[in-house]
Structure formats: C-alpha cells, structure tokens
Length: 360
Image 1 (tube, helix red, strand yellow):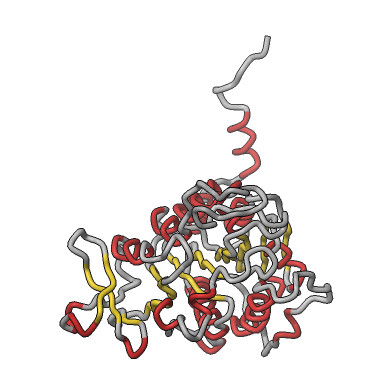
Image 2 (tube, rainbow, N blue to C red):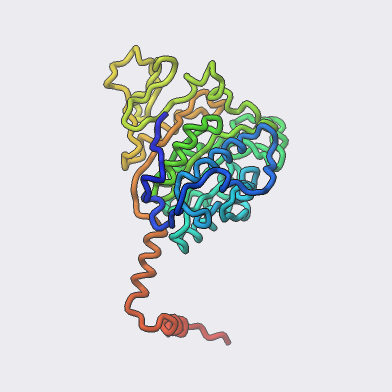
C-alpha cells in the first residue's frame, strides 16, 4: 500500500500554503506535551498519537501554527497530548469550530480529531457540511465501532445485531460506512487506514496534509475493553491478506495470497471480487483516486462488510482538486474591502441603512 510521502524539502504543499514554516529541524519530543496520556492499556489511540507526534515534525511548520480541534469521546483527548494549539470542544461540533478557524486564519494548519460516535451521531450534520464545502482542514475519524468513553453502547458504525449495554438483544440499526458517506458528500480527499500499520498510517496522514481542502481519514482503531477484536480479520496474519484490499494509485486492484483475488467491474455497474486466475489481466480495475467522478470510488467503498469486516479496501479512495470554502470566503472579503476609504464608516452605513425595523 503506497501513498505519497512528505518531507520538509518539498514544502510548500498546496494544503499548507500560507502556513509559516519552521526555521530548523524538529523532532517528536517537541510535539509531545507534558500531560499524562490517559487511555486504556492496549487502546489503538496510542498508536495513532505516536504516529502523529512523529509525523508532524516532517511538515516543517511552526508548532504555534498547528491547531487540533476535538469533540467528545476517547479520541477527543488528543489535543492534550500534543504540544501545539488545540481545543477540546463540544460534542459533534468540532468540524464547525474548525471551519471558523480555517476561514479566519489562513496561517494555520487545522486538524479535527473525532470518533465514530462524536462525528457520525450528534455531529453528523456538521461533518457532511464541512466535507461538501471543502474547507481546508483535515479530519481524523477514529472508528472503533463502539461508544468507548460512555462504556460500551453501540455506535453508528456498529454491525447489525451488535449486543451492547444499550442493545441487550442486538442492534437493529444498519451502520454508516464513513467512506461511503464522505464520498456521497463530495469530499475531495477520502482515505482509510489502520492503527496497527504505522507506515501506511503515516503515509496517508502525509497525503492528507498535502491536500488543499477537506481530507477525511477513517482510522480503524481497536477498543480492547468494549469491542476487542472488531478488526481481527485485517490484523490477523492468517487472514489479513484476504481481508485487506490495498488501493494503490495507477495499479490493478489485487489482494489475497500472491494476488489471487482482484476487483473487476460488475454487470450491475458496481465492482466485485473475482479470482485473478479466472479473468484476463486487462479486465482488472486500475485504481484512480484522481478521477473527478466519485462513482467508482463509491463502488469500492461498498466492498466493506457491514458485519465483521471480512474484507475492506485500505488506502486513498479519492484525491481531487476543487476550490475551498475558506479561500473563496477570504477572496470575497478582500474584494468587498477594496476601494473602501473608511471600512468602519461603510459598516456603519450598512447597519443604519434603509432596511430597518421599527419596534412599537
């Protein structure tokens, strides 16, 4: 699974244009705060935090120009453990707050850290609008398919029939597929990675940082206390070859031991899994994350099993360019301000203009 890597020699990246760079090299220690990390032993959050702390110095940015916004949940403790600016905000509203920051401050690299409950339940509305607007921010969605902070209720990504404290005889909800949701909202960068694959996780984060616009990265993350084993199929050495479908730009999509399985177009318009020995090599689907039409990317996202995740595409599904909300908003403000001799007087005239109300 190969994705673009980022190094300080390549700056500036489109996604980081306008953000001040650091004068010298940095290391992981400089991005590690003095706060005690308080997650359950074995939690996948530790792996993601370690990867982010090691990855941020590669961006070559000043720490004071990086901000992490979180909502509510286990993952939302993230800002405490990074020596950057950050805000532990309110439940589900991190994308809305981050939108305001990204629009007001072009000189910041803005990141959102959220979970499957925080983002897809109470925060679902804010999440989809951030993606459709294409705000220049990066959203890391930790998906452990359970409510961990509140001690084990089913979440919007839990599989049907899931027995939890809030569904003692099994959930009757059909789960969200976060990647499908992001593609349906026209997100310009959509990817999926795994907490246990440090190399792939770092590569995807690098590609997300380089992207200008909203980047949604779903991270499969194990909760050893309330949902242990949810991702066994993609982590177990005996099954991972058949469970992980790697998405590599410009390459035929194959997986399984020795590439024994592949993806082809289905008669109904979607995609399907076949044995590569049974089809001509030229019929295998070649992955193209840069296709402006998200139809194929969406079809690939539907390969993810809604049950026990027997198979799942991993990598960058979509990576396209589109004007960003914050860039366009700042351009409008600049245009409106040009030619004004006294901006404050213009504002006063607007407030005191003809369209007023008289309260009797």
